[in-house]
Each structure stands twice: as structure tokens, then as C-alpha cells.
Image (cartoon, rainbow, N blue to C red; front, side):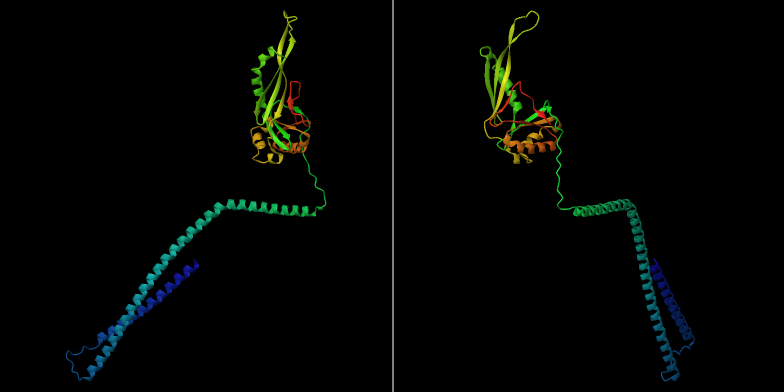
Length: 336
């Protein structure tokens, strides 16, 4: 703004000087005109040989040339003044336009500063927190470097309290055999056992025992044995009477093929073991693992993994060569 004011003052001073010069030239023209009007009018037909006539004629001619020159200069100066006025008007318009743009830009900057002040404060706070975190990390690095390299590393393993709870809820069964982990569809096989036994109960009227088998299913076959048991009836009017009931003596689960995946592969994301577990709720399900002596190490790995997933685990060790069996006198799986 100060530079624009100085430019405007300079232009006004220049215009004043030009105006004064033009005024002086106009006064000179008027003086010459007055002097020319006072000169005697030459005779209409002067004699060419008149010396006085020739002298006056030359003087008039010179004065006329001066007047014409001054008139030309005045016209030239007037054109310059007009051009200067046009330039001044253009600069004034440009100055006002720039002043308007500057005012708009100032308002935009103030609005942007008002909007970004809160973000800048938040950014500053985050930068301070980042700086403090970096300083803390550097301090921890120095403390870690100061720890002797020979200090032993202690690994802590956290296991649930070793209290066994009978498996009364939902239960899923697996078997570790020959280094492989296989899913046992035991619930489905037992349902098929019940359906098949109902069709063979009538034979117990003739023989004391009946055997049957269901499957194969999932690489396993389930063989079972039913027995007729005579019982004495008790109650008013039935003293000494006897009756009969059907009882499941035992069932045996027999693998008919090498099923399952190696234990290392069973822990991968796409394994059958992980897919089976995905269909159960960890807080409502007990995982029972039937294991032979050569698979105890694999059992511990699976147990640790299942604990991390939130499942309860029941281990059922088996002697070498013995199949998985069940009977009414057996025990339920006990989970930890």
C-alpha cells in the first residue's frame, strides 16, 4: 500500500509539471499572436522591390513558423498528457483490482487459520506424544543393551488349573495315531448304533447276545454288542415275577484306513483339524484327544494350541495295540 501511494504521488507531480509547461506554451502562443496583430497590414499589392516590405515579410514568416512550431509542440504535449492520463487510469484500475484481491486473500487466510487452528493444536499434541514415545523407545533400547547377553531367558507357560471336569457338554473327538491327527465322528456313529440296534432287539428273544456294526464313516467302523439281562420285578402283585431288558455291553471303534493329517500340518490354517474346530464354540466345547504312547509329545503341542484358542481339553491315553472302546461301565472324558 505504501509503494502504491508513492507511485500515485509521483504521477500527480509529473502531471503538474506537464500542465505548467503547456500553460507556458499557450501564453507564448498568445503573446506571439498579439504581436502579430499589431503589425501593419501589408498593402494588397506591394511592390516587389520594396526593401521594407521584404523585411516585414520575412519577420512575419519567421514568427508564423514559431507559432506553427509551438502549436505542434502543444498538440504533441496534449497527446502525451492524454496518454499519461490513460496510463494513470489503467494503473489505478489495476491497483484497485489488486487491492481487492489482497483483501479477499487476507479473509481466506484468516478463515483457513481459524479452521486449521484446532487441527494444528491436535497435530502438535500428537507430535509431542510421538517425541515422548521415541525418547522412551531409545531409553528402553539403552536399557536392553545394558542387560548382559549371557543372562538366561526364562519362558513362562500358563496352563489352566489341573482340576478335571466330566464332559457333560458338547464334545468333539480326535485321535493321534502313528504321528497323524484324525477326526473321529463318534457322535454320528453312536446315533447309527442306536438306529441299527433297534432293528436287532427282537433277536434277543431267542439268543442272549447280539452283535452288530455300523459305518464305515470318516475312516472308522463301530462294532457293538447287545445283551439280554433278566431282572426281578418288584412291587405290589408282582412278587417273584421276572422280566428282561436290553443292555449295551460295549462298542469298539476300529480304523479301516490311515486317516488324518500329520500333526505339523494339522496346526495350519487350512487343515481339517482347524476346519472342524471352527464349527464349535470354545467356551461350550470339550476337545477329547485319544492318544497312544508314541504321540504324547504331539498331544502336548495340541493341548497348548487348544488352550490358546480357549477350548477345554480331555486327554484319553491308550495302550499300544488297544482300540478305542466304550461301555456303560466306562468313564466320561475329564477336561481341564
